[in-house]
Length: 220
Image 1 (cartoon, helix red, strand yellow):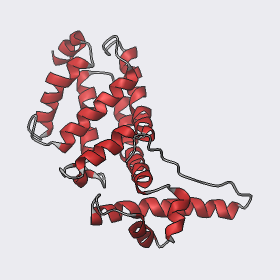
Image 2 (cartoon, one colour):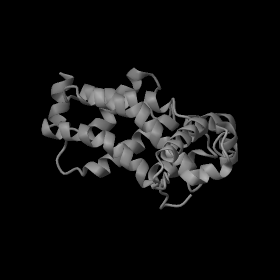
Image 3 (spheres, helix red, strand yellow):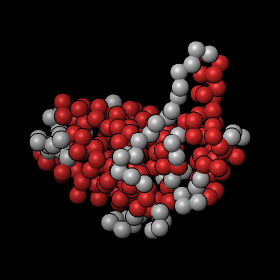
Image 4 (cartoon, helix red, strand yellow):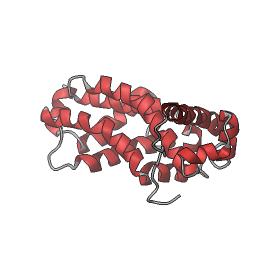
């Protein structure tokens, strides 16, 4: 898996509208079949031939849309982020900017992430590092994270709660790592119940993001 991994989502222009619709339909079939195969085989045995069979498509059709296995995995991860995280983050992000509401977003992220097709592999010592590489080395994956988080951070900054001097893009990457670590190492840093996780975030994570006086006001 290379550091310059990119998601191509190849589509060729065509004057034939039916061909375009077929390409869209085939891509949807592939992305629907991939998590089924992934849950059945695990990350290490995951392959495009199995996805083609599950989708009822020729193997070459997969390559018409994705350059290879990692390209498909990244696209799957982005789709799950958009489907699971985006609606939740949009709803919670519209709430009043407070420490408690920020923690609610983090807890909701953990809950959503545990439903990913890749979640079991995140917990595996053999494949966990590959999932981490997929998340942190793929620019489109981080773009999807930023699309969800940057509007939230802007609201907190506008409310005067975000600590000064923080780079929002770096902060999204750091938040992603924190959530990934807690998700893949349950019980290591704290208990795994929502109240224990909230206490961990409030004590160790929030002070690095939000203004301490805002934290004190929210706690009071």
